[in-house]
Image (tube, rainbow, N blue to C red):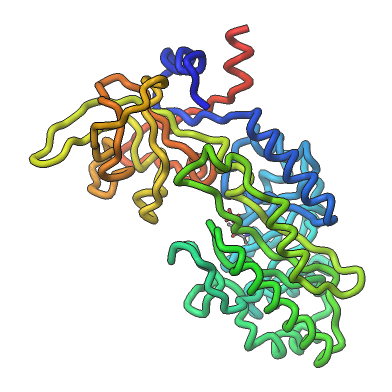
Length: 393
Ligand SMILES: *Cc1c(COP(=O)(O)O)cnc(C)c1O
């Protein structure tokens, strides 16, 4: 991914910055589109993974919808020019202002996470003389095989309505005349690499749907399975484009649909993860008592995933593209005054010096989107591969 030519471009740029490989991005979006189209699945990109204007515009160009988890994300989606009928709005704590904004813009639907929220939406619908489309986000009690901070489908997680309360919620919603129940929604977690978690989800959805029909005679038009499809952080090169086709095939084989039902997904990480890298310079190589620290000019304020979840990214010295032998071991750390400001321990590199350029791979998702300015640090810039080539040409 990082050849000599690219290195020469990078060398003159101020670091740290996010580098987005737009060719890879388009390849990935094309694969996603053709895989989704072949099953007639509807994709809503989860904006929170990366809300860069250029990235959103690129995704919009493929005809996908957007999944939002805050009022400002709904606003950003609308400003990007997405058709509001492709916007879904999730989140356990939607404020009245956010609900108002979304109702006023007639989005496709709210994914509702509690009965109280549904009642509030119904009240606003009544005041505005509108019938607001909603789906129920259910917590299916499925343990997505992933980091504990990335599960969302277990009883101890704050997300979704426990399936146990479904009957009660359905009965209650029948009395509310300014909402229209249009679907069921699920999102069991993130960075899910085990297809078994999705198979389990499909089976749970099947039985929930059967019960809903038996007890209430209800078939809802939309089934939304959320996002969560994981990417290969250990060895990104081997899987630069996630296996969307395999993922959809798994769902297709296990999800039993009723007549005329439409299936939706809200993919974030898998859409933008691999095309982004955080590029940083080595400030110092510091000798510790029994280890060496590689101190970068990028830190947890630029990419917080390692500090937040102990996430591991592949880290490469791109100043030495030809050097294959990695016989030096470093702890790779940032400059911020927190011991958790560390990217990884005991990573093997070729011998590395002050001024070398380092790429932290697979940083397109939950990287730039989670930047903070703690210690008043500057925000990293975004550099797009097609702009670099244009400048050089
Ligand atoms: C974050 C989120 C997603 C996207 O998750 P990924 O793991 O990035 O695919 C989808 N739906 C909801 C409701 C979310 O909160």
